[in-house]
Image 1 (cartoon, rainbow, N blue to C red):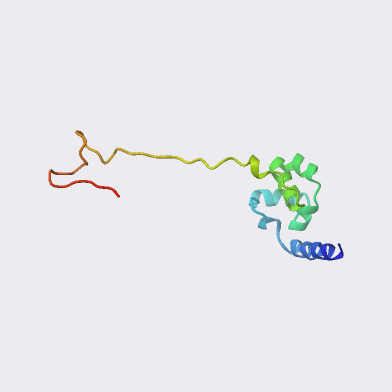
Image 2 (cartoon, helix red, strand yellow):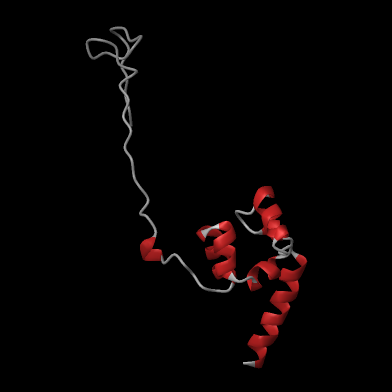
Length: 111
């Protein structure tokens, strides 16, 4: 248990040195808004009151704070499945079922 507390202290020391803009999804505008709230480092963001963050900056920012505190908000089962699409195009075919530009002696083959 003591080792875990020590690792947390080391992590906090690193987070204190990182600017809040180093968090994925925080750009210049959001960084400015966070600075107005006194949040300039990732550690300050981690320790921020997530309800206050939600009220001022929205639910997505609240979830970011929760994630920094080790509370996942999106379970793997909730993630949308990757859509597989099949795209077909007939743009290479000319009228009559022949490839565009094909002459009697040329054939289009695949695989």
